Length: 536
Image 1 (cartoon, one colour):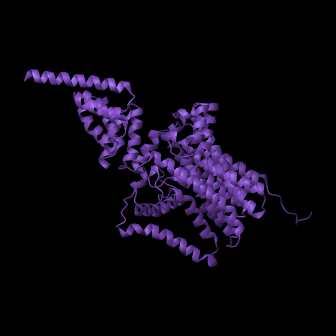
Image 2 (image 1 turned 45 degrees about the vertical axis):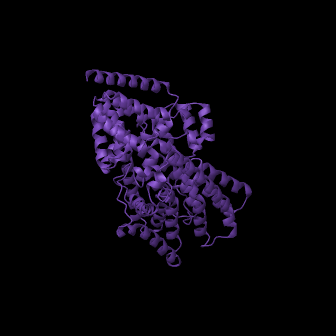
Image 3 (image 1 turned 90 degrees about the horizontal axis):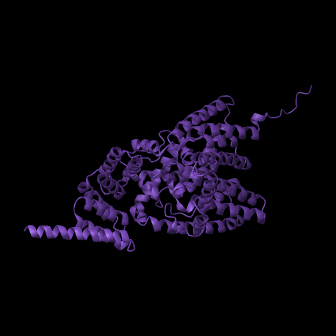
């Protein structure tokens, strides 16, 4: 028999076989999270009136400022949730299964893109991406469908546009452009795609970018700029003070350290929590400048060594930094009051260093030892992901763990306290509100929350102190004036209660119930004044 026949790969080692194995194993890793409930800010799905009617769907696409729960223009993601609610109702397992399916699809799409780019170890990279514990937050947290949906469009658009560079065709370019737009309508992080596209093309074309490449990318940059400006306008409508909360130098310091914090969790994915401890930020401390200086210096070093060590290290570093850039803190965002970085923000960015690590493994010379080590790492990731998924069972479980990591984070403790209120565990809610105010005495939400508990537990006089602090911090909030008025009424201070209601009426002048209550309180105060005068 001839001995020089080329052996055909088995089904298990074929691309299809490996894809099926990755899908099955990934589903198994995330099985621990499937029985969980809707979590904290999943309310933008289940408690959003816009998600219940066809008119609401129209508003999602045409009047985004009316959707104030999340001040961004991501109508495609909300449309997917709208459809899911219509088909399955508010069943968390349906949404969780959808997220797992999207993540598996993204992992396989990444493997396909890497194979097209001739990156060694493409399917290993897909497996690592699928099982890496740092992605649990994006997959097991229902509201993070936006990471997964935008990720799918990001990878598809990249692949289509890179193929256009190889074989230009108008329809291919239009398809890539439409996929790019669909990605931005799913989550704003996709605005980084034009830069990522040019970085990858620079890497694969020998360090050269032609005029054709720049012209093809120009419309994408323009669309990204318009979308970013619009998204910032929407954010400013809801988070009016966010832009001034962090001075420019503070943001630079935050971004530098956050960059390395992200990478640290990617390399060593342990102690993953929903909100990491915030570090002190002070531009006057020279040591704090180590992080941004190190980030820039490392980029410069890799660029300078590109002719010796190749373009790949700089390319991976640049891709990681560019895709992370919207969430590094240079542009303030709402979650910065909870933590300066979050696992979900590196969902897409992590693909670059993961691909590099997989390529190095694939090129290693120890053909027996290396696969065994890679298999061990994947097995470890499987276990860590399965364990991490358990923390996403409910809000209390998730934020208890976050509070253990950040015991002085007022925003985290506020979430935990409000969940205890929802569970009607008022003693634990009060304990967490007081712990939060010990860390940040001026936090308006915590002052408001503690004041509400004190009213409910028959301590209105004490509640007035905290509700008044909340009022001073939020003078334009109707509900704070009303809560303060009710506490003052219960503390037998009807005149002061009427004044507080007057402030609420100025904000909401058509609320007849408030006007009637104010008049009732004024009459009660008049009776008290008359009684006091008569006694004299």
